[in-house]
Image (cartoon, rainbow, N blue to C red; front, side):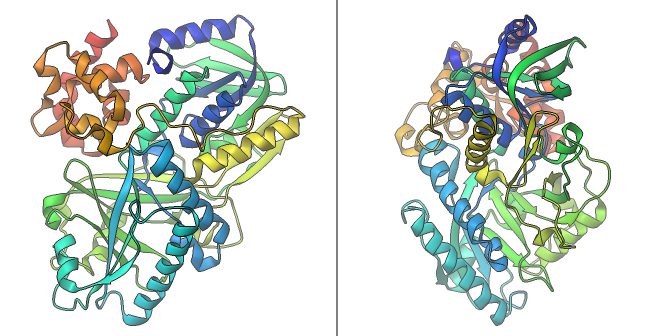
Length: 511
């Protein structure tokens, strides 16, 4: 446990040793899912590794996903078999080995109604059946992800009661992967890398990069230091051009809305409906934890200023609600929306005018003058494969050798199947979010039952989660706790309700 603990004291000690002149094998810039995946891979290969992140772990794109670990069905439309196959394979690795405590199967319902006419329904079924073949080829068992099948309208309504009834002719049911929390996946990667010896330094920004290392600014105290390194990887996503100006990207903006599950009849399956005039884009209403549903996602080219927390416009919100309304018995009204968020995808620039048509294939770019290698593109599901390819490339490019990649066989901290912890005298929320570490959180309460209770009315988070976040998950501020460890920032009213308790527990845990 101690080796996987990230906290202020460990960060300070690591900075002191690096500032004293230690040389390391690899510096990874960027604390999202790709950067943390690379840091874990490198540490497991025996490389001395430092990850620096200018803000908190999962601060940017990685926490703004659709919370899906999906098999890449949409890429088959453009014959993107490589991306689809890689997605199916990586989904299976996540579900069975890497993070079975965080990744589970989720049913999806595609209603056959006026919004999805017969021709489009047949095209959709053909794609889903192809996805089934990829699932089988990737080794996914039916107990992990059941096969697709046609279901009656009555069965569809049992799974998703808000579906429009009058024109419902049945539905197509298929299964895909869902992650409990994308930010928790990133934090698990970072902590597992730390357990293997990697130094994880948040609030440390790269000021300049050259062939001998990286100049770093400590954003907490304003100090600067240099990390001497043999190799540098730029894994900063849409911000990659700030490190290496030769990197050309076409960011796209994806918007999600958060609604109460009760507004859609507490669905047990995601409902998807096509966007008119586009055979490859859909809007989904996806149930997630804590009785919420995500509505998304947009996919629009973006050429404005980049932000860690992009705004959601009224037009974007209206678009999602209008598309989804085609599949519902009663449309969702704007007052049903309790939260909203947006993120940028780091797509590799291409000839297409539509970001929906740009490849999600990753790309590795070397800048020999700077001595930095950049990894861009890809998606949440395929982070592990991206990390493996990047490390293989960097090592070959530098003429170095290391142990082969082990990440397909190494579980993250806390990883265990749900059935292993079933029946334990531990709150279900903790098992769902922390896996085998859940009993450790219970122990932090030290008999104080208030710490095992919700921290505020209408908020599901428990007090021990905040203490654990400070002592073991690298949270250095109240914002880190609320927005990245507990994700209460997804619903501003809940964040506000929890703020006072979070401030008190942060001070207690930091003392």
